[in-house]
Image (cartoon, rainbow over all chains, first blue to last red; front, side):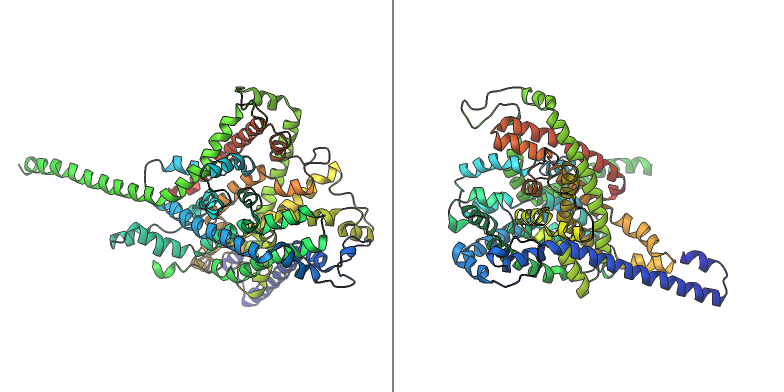
Length: 295
Length: 314
């Protein structure tokens, strides 16, 4: 649009009028965009607001007609009771250990493999990459049975090794990082190689450094996925001192009837650390990449 | 004379250079395998091996009852193809994927580009859009069923107040699938958004400056700078979304368990029903193999589609 009217020899007045018109459209488009984004956000946050409201409603008020968002009276006791009744502290610790270790290991191993796929030449690359894709194509629900027997054969049931090692690499992560690594200019590696840098140096100091947003995104996905991973810890652990948050909470609600306020309070507490973490970690994956200085 | 004298020198040099080049190649290959070793060994032991087991089980009539695993050849597959329910569920899965994948990707891309800056509002809204990904699907499925219930659910209460007669979202065959699809978009959009935000950060601002200097409108910048340079990101999101959609399970299982009247039964729920509710493990594994074949075909097509633009990455 701009190009066409600059091309024509318009008078200064016309030019100004068109500019302000354009400015008008642009500003309104901005307002429209923000209104849509905020409206969408309200839809997204609503179930969580409802969950929060359920967690502070006294037990009898969970199901009422008409349904009310704001509770008539507050009952914060679930937030206190949940600590004593299910040993929440231990669950937090186990979850942090499990999700943290899986994240550190799998981001490391995935990024190493992705470096090979994106930046190095070797025979069998195409085939091995398809192997990586194939690992994503069979639903976890059926893999869990043979996997359980494998962990059993290793004598790893109810151990941290059993929980962590099978998840220490992930096809999804390798694929994601390979896509990002492959967009970086190859001149970077070549220049470093000419200067005598080894592959590990190039991986660590150039490729990983420049892929901060992708690595941060993968770390957040892996951590939150495993923080909420239900099925895997449930089948690998057998004693209550090894349980993680989701399986611990569900076993708790399974033993009793669904007590909405207690379940919601537990869900809010399980989720809160992740939300805080995500909010503050964002600056890492929205950090622009300054390639200009490197070229 | 000189030419003759040079010839043996050249031929003497050639093999040296060739071996040197091939030794560099060999060294790079060795390095590559070293980089691949940790991840690939874990994948082979803990994913590929179980997958092989699933294929092995798919030609057996394994149940949880003895005698264990008699060989049945392609019998399981024949029963699958003869089961009209399988075809209905395949259709349901196809509709579910055909709607969720493009809708989620388009919304995620728009939200990601709208919220790609790092001010407080963007950070807050991004966190909100990512909330479903941070939550437990089992709990949120329960909360959604709660909100969508006709008598006590808040959605229908508000719609009735507006004078709209609202249906029983999860209880009727017409509305159950659209409701489940809407919740699926709600669940997966955050992931795609974060990936698109990260992908957009990888595009140097200089390209946009250059485009603006050339007088490109915001749409032209999107069409000719953002979209082509996002190709590797888009390919990743498309391939993983299609795989994910064909494997949809968790929130559907919690919200409807495939009902009412199988109207939301996807292939994975069908598989789960046979393997873990009827304890026909062999049959369940055959369903998984069929699902694998379908997903593989789609992935090959998608990768081929992107191959042309991805060439330089190889």
